[in-house]
Image (cartoon, rainbow, N blue to C red; front, side, top):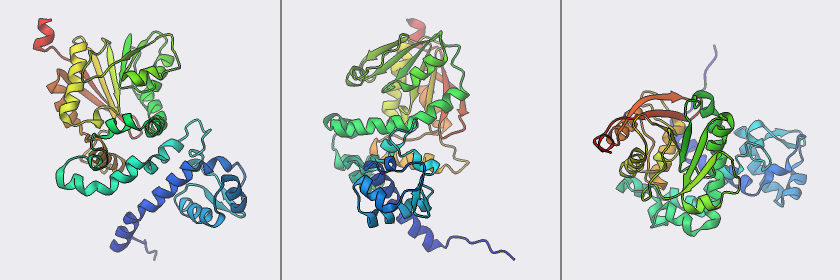
Length: 340
């Protein structure tokens, strides 16, 4: 008779409490760029420490923890790469090094220990660390803002491919990427659709930092809470709406509705929660939004209410096969649009 081992309740608490240690190991190794010093063959710990400027004993102890989680593999004579650890290399085309480093940034390292504040008040814990909020903090800390931007870009790369694989954009002559950052998604869309024109809308400093022109891409600087948005056939918001509470999310969608014609399409691309099924990633990200931005991950019903308030009708929510979903809505007639 085979006995299936189960985790005892006190072990569950111990493991979850100390999950911080494994996460910190990933962040430290990523910050120091140690994965860049591991090649195709296993490397001796002493040699790896010499290459990376670290202490051999400490490095071995940290790598043992990571290997337990499938990040690097213990081999005779040292450690070798796994598919996961390769993503910590700076030169990997899908590098996650910047994202893995993010919790080591002072803003995040100091925010999450304050989560009890969010539990008591419902307000972002980040307010205790950065009273003006995350965006004002990043505006005044350019080095951390740069690291944060790199982390978001690293995380989005795989998700963008999943979106392009599940949604057909060919019917749109012009697509506007609202809050699109460095424009990786809209550029990928343009490359996949030669007849399409694109608009990248973001804050002036983000647009000013663009140094990769595309012949069919127009860059439009502005603040979606203040400035008019461009007109387009479709609007994409990838991990934008979840950054904001309902009032601000409604304002963003309202600005799009004022800019677009009836029948235009809006696509919210982010985690969409399903209360009928466990979604560890979505639920973790939802708490991150609670603590850091004041936003939230939403269910289809909650997205549908946001759309309805702003002159859109939710059509469908599409699974991409990854952690992202695509919530598609269409602009419906409103008193404002009928009278314009």
